Image (tube, rainbow, N blue to C red):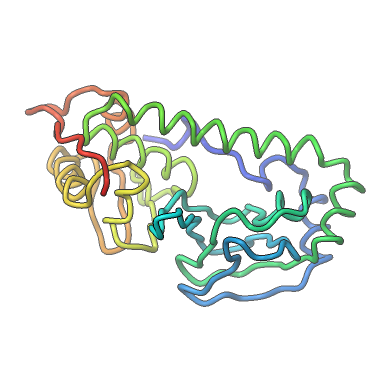
Length: 242
């Protein structure tokens, strides 16, 4: 198995090495410990953060006070760029899912950097891709059984932050309890744990503390498309998350 299908784009993948280096050189290096907040929902967009190393969790709080995990992001991302460009408050909270090395650039300096390198189209492309990915995920989840929902989310995370593990595996560092996948999959926490157990029993992944190792990516993607697990049907309880 190789990690070649569906690799997600990030800012670093869309610019040249020199353009990325210019961003790093112009900012101030800062390290964020595990669980510290890099950006807070609703705050003023006074800076942009380039993630050099580490893992962050992107989450939103809704009107009911629920804290909903949206996605995990890895190295090569820029965080808070749309708020800085549009002058709007932060739309989500970004928390360190493990120790993060970053470069922080003031919003006005980032706007100048974007203009200097003509990156308006790149930022637009990245924003549209993220929105489309989120919409595709939500649309897919409507009609999929629970095990397929979890497989769909894990497959997306593999694209976003997966790293080779051994000869054939793919490591997904979660940096959070596995139950937090429930909001991403629009499921109850108990159903997520059941579905993960089924995927492990089928030999598709191995569960670890704060991590998953995907041992068969092609089968994971097949289940994510609704194909039944060998030896039994996917978990059918599609009760929405509470």
